[in-house]
Length: 109
Image (cartoon, rainbow, N blue to C red; front, top):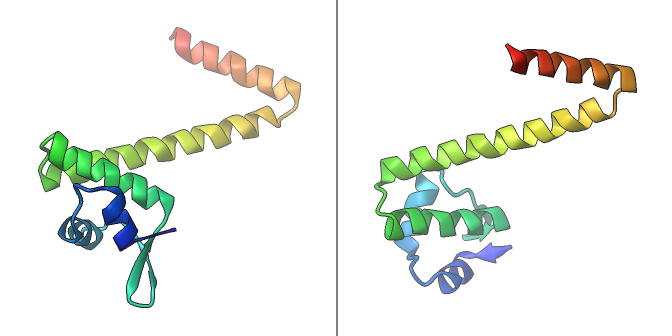
């Protein structure tokens, strides 16, 4: 877990204003330890992405929110597809074969 001060030291481009704005917009979701924010590794990585999008790529705040929303959707879909694959993989061989045939039929349409 990372404090705000550690986050700012690790990413020299970031300022407390950046982080406060992203927290207010819901783009970062730190937990609180008393009066201090604590950032999970996912938030540290997201802060780096947000800094890259705004500083290096020149995205405005609306575009950043759109990009982050789309990335969140992609990650959610990947996780769901992985879970679906695990669920299919745990089925009997006959069921897996039936699913494979159905998928092939869908691709051939």
